[in-house]
Image (cartoon, rainbow, N blue to C red; front, side, top):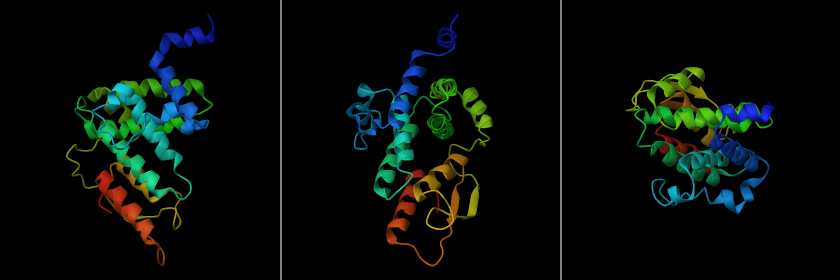
Length: 218
């Protein structure tokens, strides 16, 4: 029995499609009109978007778009991508652990993008992604443990904070948007970002807007 045949016994067609979508994007598919159709921040995720692509594809594209803006002066693109991602992951009415499901989905997709070149691992992550998209509590809690994430209250009123972090404008590596996103995934509810001397108003604007989108006090 060939390796390809063995693989198909364990993975669903949707797993292969999701991995192909991710790899096409990483290879430069951002300019593809087909991929671009999956990303439109001006349409509600529970409306006409559902006719164009599955929720899993839309979440995947939003995460990829957000990661693609990590470098350079693309603050506006980052904010648009973050807002769309927030709308997609938090409008899953089937999930009883809605916020925790969203945290897991984003973390899995980040890993899937990073594993380009390891096709088997990408397929495993895609399979996990689809399993978690159902929002089943047992599955979500398993993946929270897998990624060393604490389960947070759905009311998002936890006492979890970090009062000394840096972004790329001082000693850190992440843009303000990515700093906020990663803090939200970890369940941090309050964040203090340290700057030396001064930063431009555009930096503060990106930081505060991203924090407002994700419900993080900054």
